[in-house]
Amino acid sequence: TPDEFYVFKPTLKQGFKSIILKNLGRKTKKYIYAKMRGLKEVNVLKKDQLKFSLTGEEIMILAKWACQIEEHYQIPQDIEWAKDGKTGQLFIVQSRPETVHAPKEVRFYEEYQVKTAKKPILTGIAIGNRIGQGRVHVISDISKIGEFKNGEVLVTRMTDPDWVSIFPLASGIITDEGGKTCHAAIVSRELGIPCIIGTKKGSYVLKNGQEITVDCTQGLNGRIFLGKIPFKIKRYDLKKIPDLKTKIMINIGAPEIAFKTSFLPNKGVGLARIEFILAEKSEFIH
Image (cartoon, rainbow, N blue to C red):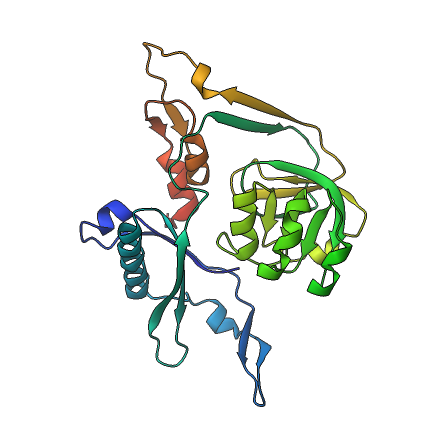
């Protein structure tokens, strides 16, 4: 699971150092060049696991490059970068249009609601805001994707472009590794498939044939339940909501659901629970 860095674009463009959040990922394995040929996987030293992959200066450089690329193409971009392991030099290796969060007209708003006292068997990072249900199909090797059936939940360690052909068949996707910008996350967002990544042990805990529920309705907190948990889907036609004299504003306290909430008809944020954000992201000394 990679490190995460958040940079605030408006103040970045004004020349300020605008890093607002850094989350340390789980980096227990890495690939190095093998002596003979190819790559081999090795363990990462504990002291290196506790280091961020980028310095503050490098984060700012990449953020500025991203803004320049976005301004050039005049559309939000999905950008990949690399860092030379010997020289430390940064490179942009790919840029393509970002199709999920790019501005577009939203006519309908869907709200998935699930209520249960049952404890999840696994948790991870939720991608999207939907719920999926189906039978588990653990696939450990790309050579076995031909066995995957329509409506099953794909469970694997991690995916790459070779797996895309079975994504449209899946009612949900679960991976052991990955972050919000990994392959499984990007493709799942575009296809609207409930996906939970970074479960650490999903492919070991879950067994073929188990009925499960993949719940992505709780912000970034993805939950996986054994069995089919009842849920409801509310669908609103935003064109049919009447104009009101009273300004309806949003009460929000979780940054991860701010984008989803923005599609509700609203006149802005009436109350932002800043104390929740500070309590979660800051360390206080009493």
